[in-house]
Image 1 (cartoon, rainbow, N blue to C red):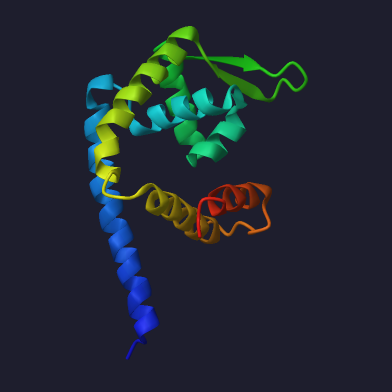
Image 2: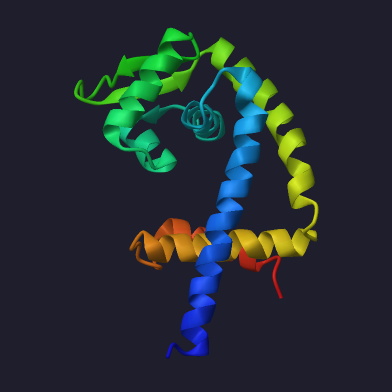
Length: 165
């Protein structure tokens, strides 16, 4: 017989999967009129937030396999939303940046997307949402076998714990 802790872990996993599916459905609904896929939207959002990145850095940020990222970047480039250039120091490295059209597109789309998605998170108090972010990142880092001393994890923990009791 499984202990209460084991059942709780499986219950948490089931809740996480069901929540993911429900939220994913709403994200797809939000993006439907944009003619962008979730992966394209995510890549544009990362470039908008972080600025120009190497293809490798972008792939790591959006958590897509290289082959999928190549396809996403090809589509975004054909739509005129990104530029790809060779790194001046290492020609094997490709840099990706938003075009003016790409910046305008993601800025407008992000505002619409946020307005569409926000009501689903308003069931949470601000502190609860910050705790949820912290806990999901904590589990995510563990599942990705990332060292918890990783600088990004330290920053996330520091930033979120300031707002937590």
